[in-house]
Length: 411
Image (cartoon, rainbow, N blue to C red):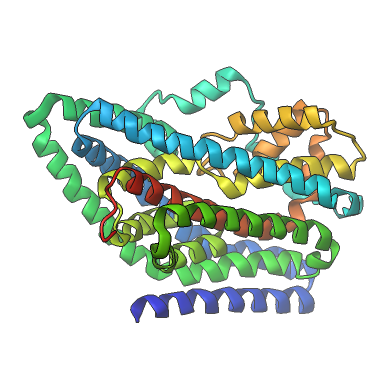
């Protein structure tokens, strides 16, 4: 009952936020909207920051405890290998799906060049760095665990935690007090999650009210072809993911979907998968996934298994080329796919990470990088669905590996 009530509050906040935002967009002056939107958005920002506050300690404590309980390096390697097999396969399918659909529907040809959002482009470009092998290594390998925690660099934190957990397992009994303390610490953090989630409806209301008051709902008319093509891709990707999930979970798949409905809804409405990381951890363990597997696979998935984002990256990159009437041969598109496969890793936690990767990729393939401004007006609404898809993909991956390991309870 309490869970259903929480979901209802989220839905009410979503529709109320969009309704209030629409009224303000239609009936208030541009100066009022310019002043109002950033202030109401602070509700969403505050909620996301509260969640980000606990991400680093939760990832570290649960991952170290999980690895230590796995027992030895060979088990860690086996579980990690199965996870990476899923991640790479899902990423390639998502990228290929985006490429096929954007070539079939040609949504870029319908984009009006006059609708470019050049003001927001500056904010995206501030977070963009030219891709290089050196930058990739620096971004992945931590220099300081405290720096990684401060910046919520999940992939760097995962690497440190893996080394720490393996070392703790190797030293044996002497590490047991540390592991026991971290286990207790993780339970305290998860209890904090229940308190923080009470603010989710306010965060949802603020985030959607801000974007609709600025953009209005009229952008769905301007970007109808682009948005519908993207939603078609998301629908097909969900069918594929759920189909593979059914092969592993059989008749328990509906039970899982019921469990993760609330995290998916929060991800959809806040456009950040970080916001549901703690809640998703809790729900997957309640579903029956081994806590050792959850604490190991889920943090990895947040860096390596971004199915919705991967599909969108090829879709958006090629759509921008279409808008500028730039022909990309299939061989070039496949090369772009492989580049996106590499450059997208480790971007979890970066605001509008998909756009940042698309911008960097466009620069590499001779597509005007300022073309990213063409899709910015509709991007928030695309981000809602690609973030929800990321959450679904990571939940299914964790359950699949648990089943693969024979560690799925109530099976």
